[in-house]
Image 1 (cartoon, rainbow, N blue to C red):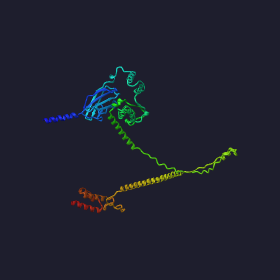
Image 2 (tube, rainbow, N blue to C red):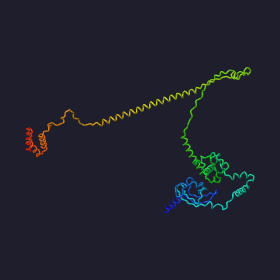
Image 3 (spheres, one colour):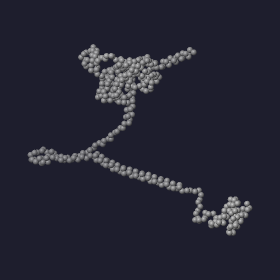
Image 4 (cartoon, rainbow, N blue to C red):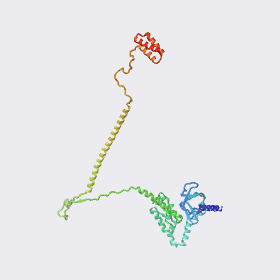
Length: 435
């Protein structure tokens, strides 16, 4: 029993130690009059990426405009997580959901101290502030040097749009005068304070038509070095991937090699040796000009130009001939296709006509041009009343209708004058009597 109790306490102690312990929030104001929310985290080694902030009681990411930046400090036994609210956030409360490694999730609602209630009741004028600052500086720096330093103190560091090259170069210039901060901290503070000056929210794409305002050194120091470095490296990787994918789709154009100019120029000058111009015997200006004027004829032969012209003419002829051949081939293909289509149509029509003819599984009787060949033999053609009565009586006899047959035969035996019919009537009556 004691073993089970010891095992139970051991397991419970391990679970208690493994859980993330988050202290109650503390609210204060930093040196820049920004409201800061602090949490103490124990029993867990946390990185910046492990903490995610959402909207209160939702899974939507929190609005980054309300937060200036976050800071995670490691003190060995515990870690301190700070949320520095933006100056634009003027509400007296702040609500959010914190998620630590997906193991600890909690909704937090905090009432904040109002900036108006924490301000002085009687603000100090600018002249008094400058006087206090000047009095404190005079104790350390001689009065002669204050005039050179005061403009630097009163004016913030601003990079004009014409001076902007890259964020790295600007950070190096600030780093030269402030060795206690990192270049990554300077670059990230410039990015956070001038987001509208960056294209697509990328620190590598900075505009040169907007002046860049550099935050104060105290704000730069409050930024986590590791967070700034990781964020900048992540931006660099995404920028490099987009640039490499875009460069692969570029169309590389190469100019053709220009033909070397092998121009042979032959000058037939026929220039004679110049003689001294004399003005003694020439009184007429026309004669003077004619006497002292020489004609020079230039003969230039350019084989490259003539060859190029010949190539152009040949290409035009070849192009025309190619078009003619293409037209002939195209027309022939259309004619062939049309002929094949018509042939298929005629074949189909022929099959339809053949299928309409009736086919019998017996042989038809041949026509011998006889009008009465289709009539059975032994039938009377003439309109003989006695013969018709006899035929009717015969039909009744074959139908075993004795009564009707006897009536017709008895009547026919009395009225008929034809001996042959009477004989046949008597024969048929004798057959009926035997039945």
